[in-house]
Amino acid sequence: MAEDELQEQKEELLYAHDVLERRVEACTAELRTSNEQLRQKITELEGAEMAVEERLQFETLLSRLSTRFLNLPPGEVDRQIEHGLRGLAQFLEVDRSTLFEFSQEKTHLRATHSWTVAGCEPAPALIAFDQLP
Image 1 (cartoon, rainbow, N blue to C red):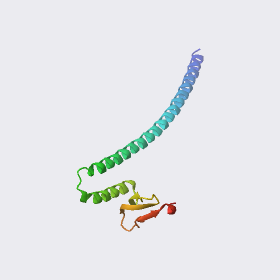
Image 2: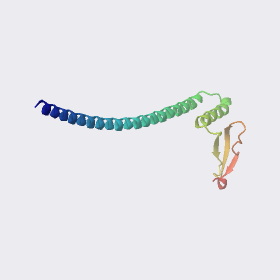
Image 3: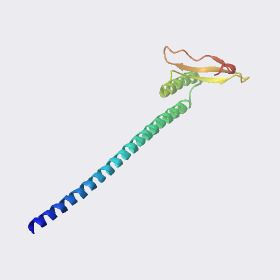
Image 4: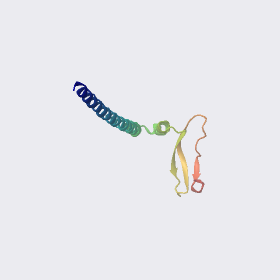
């Protein structure tokens, strides 16, 4: 009788072990899925954080630009516009930044202020609308 009991306990123990192993496998798979979802969410949040930070930097730049012109002597306006164009170009990581105005006839654009990286060709001084891409 002791051998039968021992065999029965052994089978119960093996069954319990199999059940426990399946539960561990299921929990492990669930944890892997949860970890992957968390990694994806972290990546999304990091991207959103970077976008918000970039937006804040840009809005700070625009705010500084607009306040720079308050109570500015007329002789400083052109220099400050060019300084602002440089700041915008550097923020946007472009080689040049130009401010244009329409001709009275609305047929041309005339460059009024410009900033260009050293060695880079400046924008044309006058552009006819039929020359635009």
